[in-house]
Length: 328
Ligand code: XMP
Image (tube, rainbow, N blue to C red; front, side, top):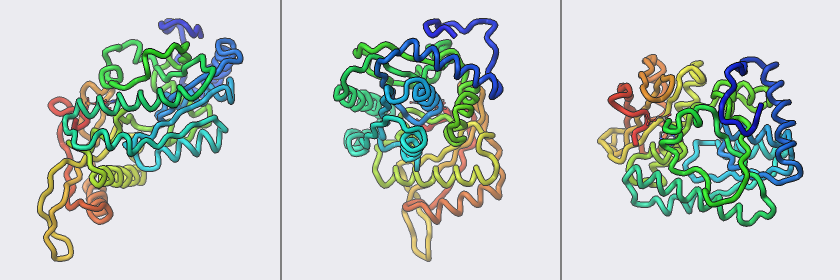
């Protein structure tokens, strides 16, 4: 594949099988070695499927010439940063710099309730943290990026539209974008062939600002924890029910209001958790998954008993439009 072209050749076969993925991997490894030579590459590794596949390809091609930076903004899902460390440091032997910037992000976000301001703070802070770490490294010539074909096709698409973050524009790196002519399903097949865990390869879409847009209004640490814990329970119960990978996106939201409840004979004043589960092709419109009531009962029971500060569970029955998928 021509690494400099932004146009997918009309006769390029869809990568649907392991054999095709292996052929793509071999071709890319040679192309990456030719492009990079003995240069050094930097990559922001979020743990999402695109950047993970790019990291795994680069490790295969140039090994320790790649440095990955994983910024934990404190808005990751439960266990996600640890998985990035386990897979990339533990299994793949990557050069990985892990930055726990939780306090920095949450301090900046304290008291901020406007959704777009929250997004801008998260995006801006991400660039600053990444920039600071990059400045400590010497001799970096290349920047790896998980651009995929829909990002090129729809420069006004969801990712471009929402990604107020992205990476520094003023850095003079040469871009390395080995999956830029692939569609998402092909990236997943390649990821699987590279040996990445299913949880990473079939990961549902997760917004750049993470749980920050699901902790509605001004983020507080206790309510953020309620989002993270309820999300973990939801994912676990969906997996047990065989729905993981079948429902396009599912998550929990915790709004910034409380309601009255009763626990152990005492009145409580606690948050509701809103469960959202949707299906879509392109995220521009979406329908609601019709959840089984028994499953909903189990989820409600676990969330109300296991998540601190919560006394109610609600299901969001609204398609897009009129609602958006996320709450902010
Ligand atoms: P909405 O809420 O606009 O979401 O219907 C459509 C899809 O985009 C994801 N999303 C984001 N992705 N940064 C991202 O990278 C963001 O700020 C952002 N906001 C929404 C959302 O999860 C859904 O898949």
